[in-house]
Image 1 (cartoon, helix red, strand yellow):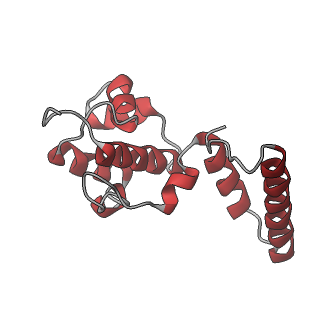
Image 2 (cartoon, rainbow, N blue to C red):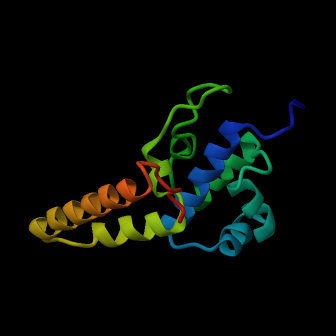
Image 3 (tube, rainbow, N blue to C red):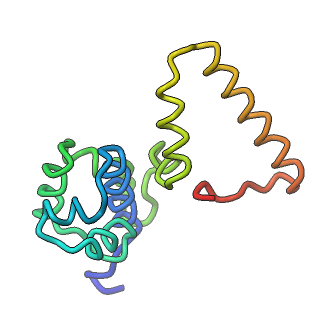
Length: 138
């Protein structure tokens, strides 16, 4: 593998950039404009296709107004096996929307009921598929 070839860690960092960008309600175009990049370049970073240099990573953290460490979350497991991060659960658009909507619910009883409903639905669906889970970005 070439030293410039993206790794699993690059994919994790890109996923974190995407997650924080979405949390701020920014498009790839807006983030790109803040960094002097095209939206396509931001997209390549987020998809882990292109590596993000350290200087650019610092600029991205500033543009997103997040600590640099937030963009490295889950990447401390080394090159071969990055540490799993809870962020991977909501990195795709639909799970992120679900988490955002859930966070907006103030009623504890309703939140418990929704969790129970989703857990039951997941068990039923897993039973129909013989226990196999589908991708989170579905």
